[in-house]
Picture 1: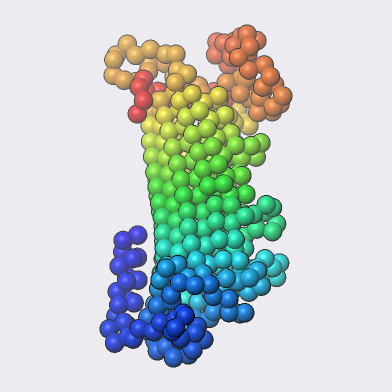
Picture 2: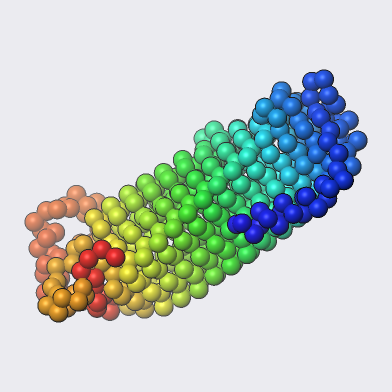
Length: 408
């Protein structure tokens, strides 16, 4: 993150040594006159007011755009407020609103086309179809923006921050609410998503597809329609994120589908219907994550193999682990399970008896959701006790042979 900011700043400063300052607004130049008069790497100071230009404002030269007293760029639900078609552009301090919804073209409040070193920071975007859209961009930074939409249906809503076919970009410290997806990555490589807050979006707080070698750190995904989805990707690192209150019959803290060679460390999953749902995942490493007060902490499908869950905490979940097959080729090692009833005679902090986190009732409830009406009944307790004594339906090899006695 810091390196990307430094590179963008140096590139803009290098061209600005001999640049001029032009002013836009009442008592100054108009937008079109200022853009025509501007030379590469000039600075446009846009003063407070409401700007309805009747067409998109097109930036085709390297320059810095600075809003003074929050000028409004209003698309009037007819045109894209700001289009950036040049590299080495910085945009900050603007309100951008009312880009149109169109089934043929992805209009955005701010859209960047085929550019490098574009820096979009500290803006407020309201009621746009897409908020900030990066298309085929390299080494761009989107940081410190507030994005709010009034989406009511997925089909008529766009994403907060949308990146397509990008490399080495940074999306950091933004807030996205009310969009279809808060943050969307498709064919994006070698990039970072850091410190964002994605809340109350219609579908996913983060939606991520066909993207490799990316890093997500210290983001909060709260109360989104279906949580977070990361799919068809490899070498993904997710560290220190918070997945909270993503609830519903098809909602997950995070859905992992066809992911390989990836890591999830020190994340917190709180009050989700299902914290992690995994399908087709291989060679992934899960360590020091906390699963607390979820319906299902982990749903591990039989299509997953060679994944390691080590030194995680499972606390106050209705069910810790569920799976759909007796043959499970994954490892559980040294996790803390609050349902563990074993003992530690050696007093080394490691349980002497293996723990099997898949209960018979969990399998029944997963196959027949209406069986949840029997939750906490004597019959359920009897079933689980009988299964522990004579295991028959729960997978024998899905067990933790060294369960931790205390929270890790």
